[in-house]
Length: 176
Image (cartoon, rainbow, N blue to C red):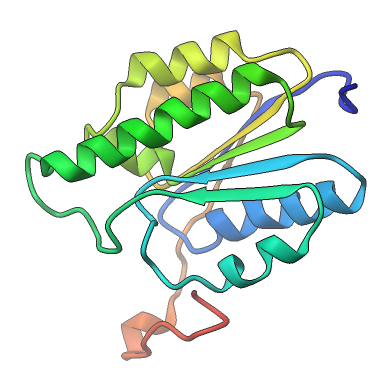
């Protein structure tokens, strides 16, 4: 039986740090309240992120990451990148439509959209057809305007200052 009376659509976007972190914070809070959460990561498979080490220890939290373990820079993107993103989208459709999970997080889906790895129309259809009780969270910089319009909540992370500009590298446990 669903625990959310009304699931909303949330978007975390912008060029600042913290979009995935905000989504994982929401997941942690939800699991703490007994909700079931499924996180699907677009283009993050193969990366060594710290959150991957704790997911299996938490009840009611499932994560599946897709990607080759590198940033997609080819234009147009390679066949394997497109196929992996299509697999992530297919799983997203299956998980959302099942209604089994209270919250579904589609991490970096905006990046997959901007790289033309997946269809904007299919994502908008997923939003429109989601079960009433499912909370859907989409992350990634440069969320398309159509996604922003379809959302109930949009948060834009804005970069004001970042240590990378002083030569700091990404730190294990902080950035990944």
